Length: 123
Ligand SMILES: Nc1ncnc2c1ncn2[C@@H]1O[C@H](COP(=O)(O)OP(=O)(O)OP(=O)(O)O)[C@@H](O)[C@H]1O
Image (cartoon, rainbow, N blue to C red; front, side, top):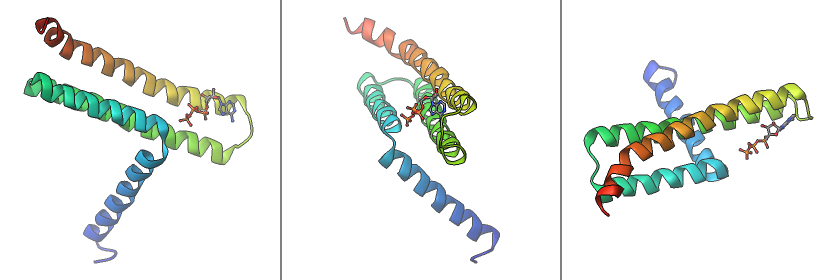
């Protein structure tokens, strides 16, 4: 079982779960973004958004959290392979942070498209 296909997949899920736990426990940026994800999920229940809106919102949250996790891993690799200041390390970190920023802007746009009509309707 230990080295079987299924055993290896179970191990991978265990490592990935631990990685997700580390991200949520230790990374302030992920904690902020996950908290925003919880808030918009509550807003989704409050405004009773549609199935399609839930799908767009859930995808947006997953995209931001996933990219922030990858950004954190890239920063950790960069710091590990080159702890000192280097122009190229800075560029690599800026690129990874830029990817999160683009996803976050897209998520904000999706949030505006979903919630603006509900907010306008309630006034
Ligand atoms: N070793 C380095 N060499 C050159 N520039 C760096 C280096 N480390 C960080 N920087 C610059 O500082 C910025 C912030 O880097 P840092 O690693 O502190 O990321 P951060 O976004 O503050 O991450 P977090 O808050 O998630 O730890 C980088 O985007 C880069 O421009």
